[in-house]
Length: 180
Image (cartoon, helix red, strand yellow):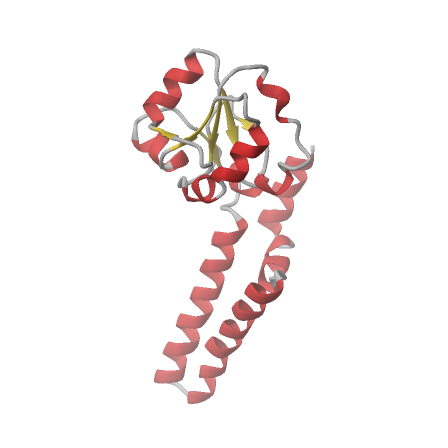
């Protein structure tokens, strides 16, 4: 059974009453912006986590937009346990921020890897298309290459561009500071 949603304001009220906020985003997503005091239990590692941490207190899950928590709501409910009062923040961190509630922002951290890949792939596809139209049709190979890479990433779960971006200087520094 899916978890009920709560507005950011209602979530804040529950937190003031002792509820526990759980951020299910991955570490690279959380590094740049987060809600202070939220426990970090990435969705990918939630099976390994002990959700008995709530000690009878309500648990509120959130992600960036609310879509991931809603999509995994039934699974999160099962992980939280039948005796646990649990919720999903409607609209996630984005709605929390829009409601004027405080967030911790660290602009020195890079944007999350998925967005870096989208920017890189989109930029390469656009540049290849423009160069193909304006300079030489041979440049149409670039968007074809990018499309093939995205297709393979979707089919296999391996993203070559993400691997390359992880070794970029701005991401290496961020990974070292997260490990410390």
